[in-house]
Image (cartoon, rainbow, N blue to C red; front, side):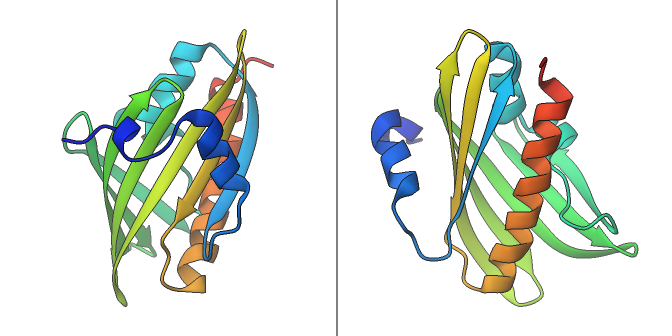
Amino acid sequence: MRTLDQTIPNVFGAMAAMRSPQKNAIILASRIQVDARRLFYALSLPEYMEAWVQPPDPEEELVFESVTRERFQIDVYRAGARRASVHGSTFVGSRTKIRYVWKTIHPKGVTHTAVDLWVLGGLDRYVVGLRHCGFREMTEQAWHRRMWGRSMQRLGSLIGTG
């Protein structure tokens, strides 16, 4: 199994890459005042992701299943019917670099995307940077942009201390 260090450059290079334009990419950053260990667990363990990852629409529901310590499935429901499934894997490069590889199965087909997370800072004050790229359609990108926006807010309110 390849580690994240083998798939993306160092943190500083990754942050520079986040700022460079990329077609169909979502780029977000969030400041969080939190214990480093709590932040790492929230970002890297599927059973903790369930607490902060939010659907983009309040009428949708996300149902999580941890397959293994590194693999998870998220089913998206609307009006009681499953609309899509995300089969994800987590690759931890360090406490500052995490990648989710997503395979989204939806009515229009299958999309493979990657979510890169970088954690910068210290002394319980951090910036979490997120880049999600690889979307085939703008509707997929828009759905995920709303999801990540709500999720990053939830992450800060759930585990933040300030």
